[in-house]
Length: 132
Image (cartoon, rainbow, N blue to C red):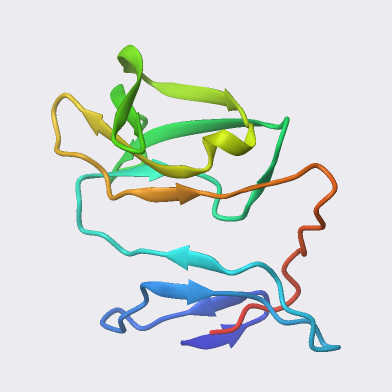
């Protein structure tokens, strides 16, 4: 990949799944994010960076063209809620950290994504310059 202003650009056939982070001019490093590229029909929209306890997080199941699909949501292998929903909102606690995915009625399931949780007083570094 190559850096362009504030973004990383990748050629179409480059393998781009992996762990990414940002690095400041003084050498400080941000939280790492794991990005997975998938050819599945749906993906779970979930924060890439850690979220603070007490904050609200909304998870959505998105199809390839960007629309939101009604789906069943799962956390660490267990269903979240009794019915198919367009989205779910969680008031995040430490116990909510783990693997999430969604499964709409008309498609297979999304890849699993990890929600990371940090305490209220934990500093979360913002991104200054991505490492490509």
